[in-house]
Image (cartoon, rainbow, N blue to C red; front, top):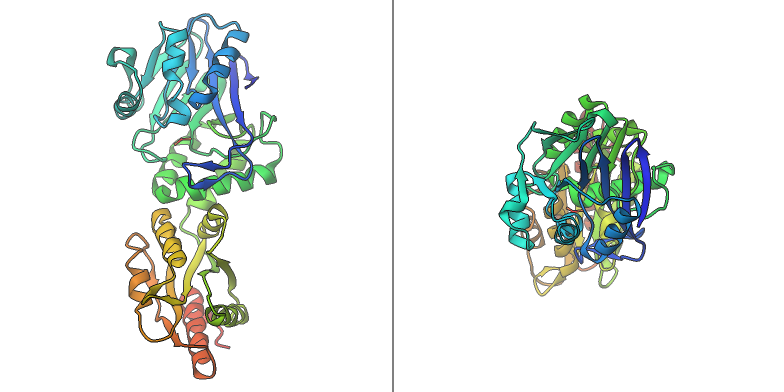
Length: 396
Ligand code: FEO
């Protein structure tokens, strides 16, 4: 646990989890993660903002004791997920006078999950405030960034917003602030892609509510604190915008090199037409990196062999993942090979009800692609170029 002062009376209490490899048994963590609690000491009252994962709870208690905190008035729960609320019961054991401050949804989720009684809570709604004396906690409900319960706490006198998961990053570092901006940007991008992208419109709305606060610090509950807020708000403005880039993401699997040869031909054809192609073999892949490509790729082409009359299960898995992440992809297509039967396009399209994309004419090839079959791939490349560039498209 690293305790550091951010500004007068405001401390960061970060539990470092260097060697955590996966989050939710799903999200790869190449740089581990941190669980950040914050302490706000006012002239009359003291508040803890969020807690940490239960396995790190004792280190949070030790950090509070080391700072000489004998009494806590409030524990603000910005979000019920266990990595932030899981140590509330332990905090209440050590600080039984503290009240848990949160909104009705978050309270419900915490009571459903943890041994915290109803009378331990103070309920707050959007726009409500609590005074700590010379500092104020202002609460802003921001549902669906990324659960229905999420909220942000603003302390205007300190110029700081505590955003919980919003604008967070799975990046373990002993540095308090995001001084290594390239590393922070990459980790924040991965985090956005995996956690916030499914709720892009809500993230955009939360950003629009946060910007007028003109904070000096943005303090998320994972990763470093931002003391140059424009850095992270600029990135979020880009990611949450409607803009896409002329990039074609190609999740593919090949069993006997037939589909791989089709992908190679498509990559060359797209490049000749001014499109950026990104093939990803999805048999073994980093789902976080894959998700990052989806933030602004205009197009996805699924490429699969036929297995027992169906797409390869790894391609189906990639389609399921894309459906969960609901990216702003505008165009999609299916390309594949088969030996005797199967309807890959219908099967893959059926996995993607949340993808609001225009489906282009698929390419299905019997056996190895050659001659006219290659011309079909060129036709798909032309369709993709026209979809992306309209009349400016170059047919090669
Ligand atoms: Fe970091 Fe949604 O918890």
